[in-house]
Image 1 (tube, rainbow, N blue to C red):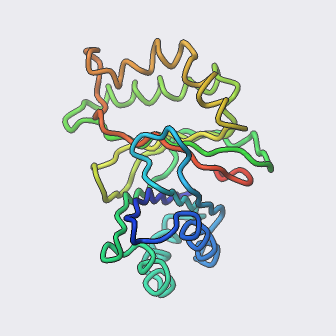
Image 2 (image 1 turned 90 degrees about the vertical axis):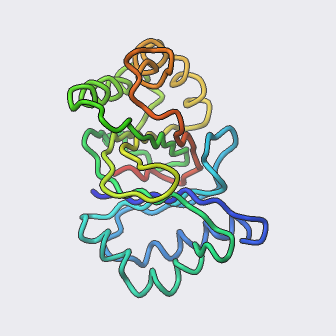
Image 3 (image 1 turned 45 degrees about the vertical axis):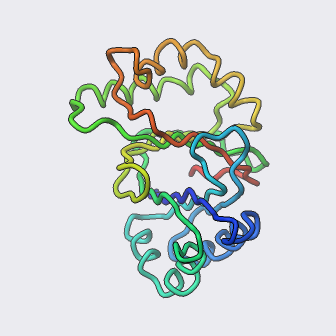
Length: 219
């Protein structure tokens, strides 16, 4: 799989978030190599999650780049994301390095992402340990259904993004309760983010955000 995420900010003049998300999801299904495709208004209590998010999984990286250069993208998607219309966005192209989609789940839930940037100059050993610690979480937090820890291949926007840590939950309560409050979260993984911890390697500006999904999108 190869994934593409847009985190979209709208000015007052840009249009309605629900309508734009619905249109992006509709067009997304016509792109080459699409495996899963979903868009929606960003749920409350996000951090830098803007107004809406749009996530696509492609069968291959080649399909992803073909979609971005396609006539459909130029004629139908670019106008919806046009900065001249008051739209700004982060675009993140990424592939899973560690993942588990065995939970399936053909029912409604939420998809959540933590999109982050590791400090330039961080050693490879530190990055590997950060990834290993993060990937331990699903084994300790049963509320996590499908998940993927991903490395960013290309990005544009507010940071030079390096990782996407994405999960699916049955509901917001699973994210805000069991996930956030589990000791592995605040006792192990948080140290990589905490400015007061010597092991911190993650830029404090990150995207923590979720949107509602009708069925699983992590494949």
